Amino acid sequence: MLNAANQDCDVEVKLAALSYRGYWTSGGRPSQHGIEQDAQAFVEWAAEFFPSHELVLWGQSIGAGIAANVAASHSTKDSGRVTPRRLNAMILETPFVSIRRMLAALYPEKWVPYKYLWPFLRNWWDTEEALRTIAKDSVPPTILLLSAGQDEVVPATEADYLETLCKQLQLRYQRKDVAGALHNDASTKNAGRQAIVDFVKSL
Image 1 (tube, rainbow, N blue to C red):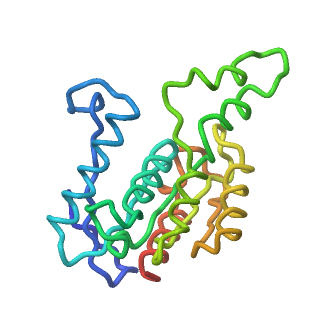
Image 2: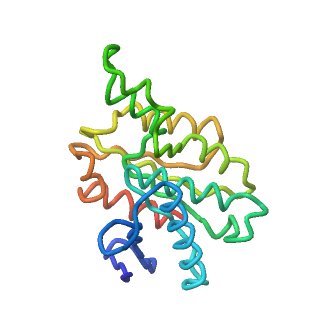
């Protein structure tokens, strides 16, 4: 955890990062169910540790799907965890719609079988499904879609699809395409960092 200060941002920001099970120094083996449990516990810890702060979930790539899933699980009225108003916003960096769609995007050739094997996926994070659940909440979080202009992993059509979905669901959102950024560069480029600062200041 660290305190984040920026000369262009006049709000206090505390940044806390989660190391999922099986990654970095965390023990255990990664799985979708286990990672979702870790993310849920992390959000509950953050809400308790920072009781006077609004929560902004930030996920990159697959992490964007995890963040959306956590927000969706907390948007239900009977969750008994964090109230929807505490989940103030989400930053979805280089997001994709679903693992199933990514299979088709990565292996579009008809003679390649991988995209037909989606029923056997071990992970199935679905940002579209999560956003549809979030949209039913009385106070859904504001969303920043941060995409990389030269993303070599996730096609631009994924962010386009999510933007159209946000419009259809009447979700409050912002979209920023970071020119020249590769998949892992969107938030490290000056334009990406500034977009995040502007988004946080606008909340």
